[in-house]
Image (cartoon, rainbow over all chains, first blue to last red; front, side, top):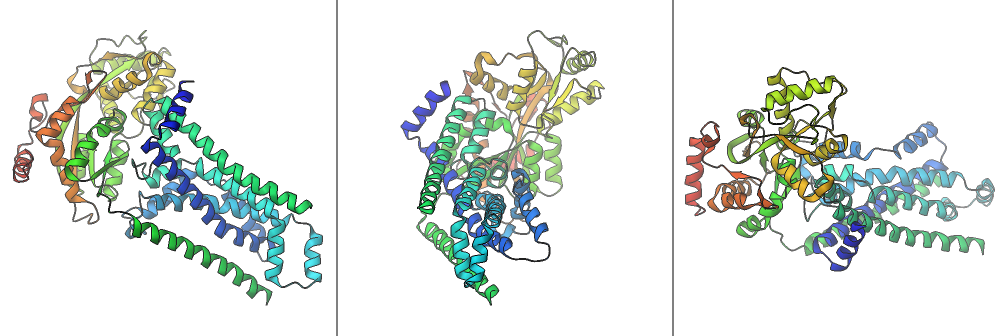
Length: 231
Length: 314
């Protein structure tokens, strides 16, 4: 209860620090989701449409990676970006960019996996029609992706949900630096550790509100596209 | 034919995405105002949990036009991260490993800046009857009560400075700490105290972290101090400057500024003035480690004093 009151206070006080933390969370997770989609949708589409050796292995691998543990991703990305790691010269460790890279590794398989299953689940009749029309492949891709847009939006929702709620990876590669790489989830963990539960709960409420807002937008897109389809 | 075309579209999509992102990043960086340089301190959980660094930050930032930040780690992890070149300076509390770190060439200078002490805390009912004994005796009693199922000990188990002290106490007590009575949390000080609180168990904490948690949790923290004021429970904190030849990318000038700030008159008195609920949590110790029975650091102190003088920071 105290947390709710505190949350409202923080929300309306426009606390500079909390605002920064919230904006950073949004920036990192939205960018990671969009980047994950930029690679995940085309690759998922290709995997679904092509027949090649080891297709089931690739699909299974991508589906497995959908459950990639964030801490493992964090540790591996940390070791790569560390000053004594192979990519240390990029000087990216403990920056928001490092957080985006780590989260992108988490969102990519989610988008890719859901794209594969939604393209595969399209009516075979549709594909037959396209083949019988000997449609050019660019046209075919457009039609098929358009028909699976509900699934693609679901992919974005799932990927964003995984990114915004994730703490292990960004803690390790971002370092939870005050005013720079401190995101909502890592701040919640820190305040919980410090025994300041009210602030932690307040940040948790902000996190939920953000997730709700973004999902509201995506669900609106989903609804609209469904109506379009039925008319 | 179709394969080629399909790939083309995807190629175009990827190129467009990359261009948009690159342009965005470029605009972001070009427009970004020059921020004060960021100092990254690898430190132990107690300096963060107590709020000490939050308290010192504005003074340091304004004096040196810097942006002081820290990584919240146990001493073991802090030393590891610093040895990879991922932090600019160390503020930790495990003398044995600090000295090893410097002598292995990772650090160039170490000095004691402050201390507090550890306390053995446990449930007010004190089933192991550890109250008022010395630290070693308390550990033996807790282990005995634990073996007969009447007590639980909650360990950090995270290779931190506190964990190292705990292990030294077990060795001194001649106890092999394992069994169902011995729980290892693998996390920081405050979370470990909270686990001990839930389980009605014993644990060792630095006094600062315990006081701070007590002030935020109030009545919901029932643990009390059972054993204190033992010289084996003293907890000195050291700052280590890293070897800038080995780690050319670290901000070694800013790291030196931080060390000088902490040992300057201003820094030392700020440390001494920091309180939680009216309780002083850290005691300045620069230049005088002998006062609590630690070896003298005269050579280092003389060198730092001359640096302070030349920088006008006394």
